[in-house]
Structures are given as structure tokens and as C-alpha cells.
Amino acid sequence: MENYYLFKIILVIALFVVSLVVAMYSTFAERKISALMQDRLGPNRAGPFGLLQPLADGIKMFMKEEIIPNVSNKTLFILGPCLAMTTALMAGVLIPWGGKIELWGETFNLQVADLNIGVLYIFGVTSLGVYGIMIGGWASNNKYSLMGAIRASAQMISYEIAMGLAIIALIMTTGTMSLGEIAAQQDAGWANIVYQPLGFLIFLICAFAELNRAPFDMPESESELIGGYHTEYSSMKLGLFLFAEYINMFISSAVIVTFYFGGYNFPFQNEINEALGLSTNMATALGTLVMFGKIFFFIFFFMWIRWTLPRFRYDQLMRLGWKSLIPLAILNILITGVVMWMNGKLN
Amino acid sequence: MTQYVFYFLSFLAILSALMVVFSKNPIHSVLYLVLTFFAIAGHYVLLNAQFLAVVHIVVYAGAIMVLFLYVLMLLNLNVDAEPVKKNWVKFAGVLSGGLLMLTLVATFHKAETMPLIQDNPEIGVTANLGKILFNEFALPFEISSVLLLSAMIGAIMLSKKDTKK
Image 1: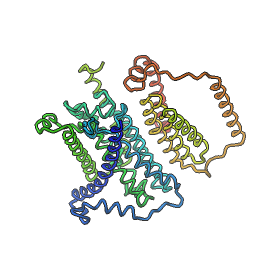
Image 2: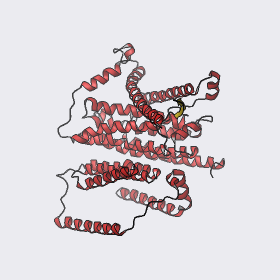
Image 3: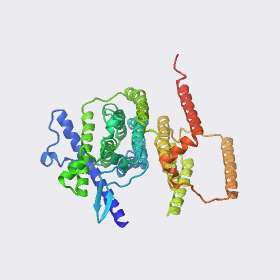
Image 4: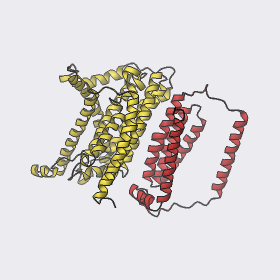
């Protein structure tokens, strides 16, 4: 039992560090990718290929002057970025990062917690993510921040509905809400994307909206709202808001990969592991590497879209959410139900 | 262990519920209400109802309270702008609230407490809950869904009444 707790604690700490490092280098990747798309060089001064740029940015963030506006509500002003960061880090514990691992003569799953309501937990954490933005935006006592906060909340609530409906269809096909089982089910058969192509598309679009990423970055649109909810923030509090967005991007990529792209599984994995003669731990390591490859592809995809598409107008965003995505998601549930019924999967 | 968690959650729930009432700032009230919901969700988990706990968080803390905050932020109420009620209204409120409390205390004082017995400890698991809802309680479930649907249509009708035909 002690080994169990020790393993979980190590896993939590490793997860924390990995989330931060991935988020750190996502900021670097974002700048490099935007440079690539705009035919520029991007940051290349700090270290070889500019690889130390995130460190330099971090030091800059910490060293900058901390300004708390006089009129703002101080407690809530500080609470805002804290909440944003906390909710960003909360979802990672449920994601199965790999298969089984043998340590100290025992077998563990490479997952911190496998709740039987895992999918709902992820959904709950997502819906709480807006509090940091709303509280921060309101406590700044600035009209631009308030507008950003209000936009963020309306956007989140609108897209949560379509996201929930897309997840319902997924739960219908998998028959479980535990993320560990969803990943394990895609072991030998097809990945869930084959059964849920429409559901995946809806989920992906909603993920963009929930993350406040372009083309749905209305809450912080520079050209209209200066910086939206973080206009009044400076120094590391601003850094925490930006960082939380990148951690959210990493975690939601991991969720998409787990839900729809087989998680740590890859095609012909049993044959490949056998042919290479890998031990359990090595096979798990290979699976985790594959999973991170998929996650990095989705992080790249988020950036690709950001630097390709212009921002939506607010009414367009609402129309897309309520009049296209929700009916499509309901249609998806219906189709899933009919197909399952025809195949005799309903009992 | 469970007992300590229970006392902690109860303390948190009652304290934050009191803060909802006593806070001068409506935004603070809403945030304390969110905290109350979390404490109550913790109680649900203690009662082995994980599904209910998470749905409670998703629906109340994640959606309804966000809408409350949204409306409050749009109205931008502050202490100066808040209308002050007349004295007799305050008096009537205190009186009726006190009477309600008296009734509740008297009821629970006399009530016999029974230990919680769960026939099936797995009842809170989503699959079991769904089976019971759709088999034993199908009619109440359907009726409540019709009720919610009519409330939704009513809300849309109310918000649309100003548009020209």
C-alpha cells in the first residue's frame, strides 16, 4: 500500500512538471510556428535556435513590476489567476498516460485516478475554468476587462452544451465513463474516431471555444478589447493567465487523444512489441511516447488554426454554437442510437 | 476519517451559506454560494452518490452560477446603488425567516435519527442509477423532463415578446 501511494505521489509531481514544461515550450512553439506561417524567423537569440527563449520570457515575467489597480477588488484580483491556474491543472490527473508499469514487484497503471465518472469530472473542471477569467475580469474594474469576462462566460456556457451532447454519443458507444477504460477499449479494435467522426468534429470545435483560442478568442481580442480580461494584469499574474491557457491546451489535446484517437495505443502495437521483444515497462514507455506524439500534433493543430483563420464576430460565434453545433450534436446522438440499435448493441 | 470529513464539509457549507447572506457585495455572495455547492457535492460523495455530486457541480457551480455572475456583472450592482428596503419589509422578512427556522428546529429536534442503510452501495454508480431511473421511475422522470421543456419554451417566449411579428 505504501508503494501505491509513493507511486501516485511521484506520478502527480511528474505530471505537474511535465504540464509546466510542455506549456513553457508551447509558448516557444507558438512563436516559431507563427513565424513559419508568416515567413519570418521567430525568436532565435537566446541559446541554440532560440531554445532558451521560454526561460528568458519567464524571468522577464517574474522581474516585471507588479501593478494592482487602486480601485480594484484586491482579494478577487489575486484570486482570478490562481483559480485559472488551479482549474487548468486539475484535469490532468484523470488522463491515462500509458499502460501498465511494473515497479518494486507490483503493477501500476500510469494514471493518477481512474474515477467511474471520469468524463463528467473533466466536463466539470472545464465548466469551472471560466471562474478565473470572470473573477479576474470583474475585479480589474475596467470596462474592457468586464466585457472580456462577460464574453468568456457566455461563450463557455453556449459551447458546453454542444460539447456535452457530443460526449453523450461517445459514452453511448463506449458504455463507460472511465477514461482508463475508454483508452483500454481502443486497444485492439478501431479508435473511437471511426465510430464518432461527427462527434469528434463537434468536440474539437467546442474545445477551441472553451480554450478561448483563435478563431474563438473573443474574450481577449486585442483589436477590440485591448487584452480582454487580463488588460489590467501585469507581471507573473498575467503570466499565470497565459500559462493556464497553454496548460489547458495541452490537457485538452490529451483528452481529445484519449477520447477519439486511442490514447496510448497505436496500430499493430502487440505485433510490434512482440517483434521488438519489449518488456512491459518498455512497451508502456513506447505507448506513452506515441501518445505524446499525438498530443503534440493536436497542440500544433491548435496553433495552425490560430495563425490561419481570422477571428469570428460575436454574433457568428453564437449562431454557430446554438444553431449549428447543438442540432448537429443531437443528430449525432440520434444516428449513433439508430446504428447501435440496428447492430443489436442496445439492450 | 469519514466523520471528520463530514464535520469539515458541514462547517464549510454552513459558514459559506451564512456568508452568502451577510456579504454586502452581491458578487461575493455568488462566490460563497459556489463554495456552498462544493461543500454539498462533498456530502454527496460521502453518501456514495458520485454521479449526483459531479452533476451538481456541472449544473449549479458550472452553469447556473456562471449565469448569475454574468447577470450581476452586466447590472454592475454596488453598495451605493443597491436599493434600501423599507423597515417593515425587513421586519416581516426577519419574522418569517425566524418562524421557518423555529419550525425546522422543532421538527428535527423531535425527529428520530436513523442510521443510513444503503441496500446497494453501488447505487450511486451511473449505470445503476440510469437503470433505476429508466425502469422504476420512468414516469416521474419523463414528467419532470416535460416540465423542464415547458419552462424552457416559456423562457424563450418571454424573451421574444418584444419582437415585432
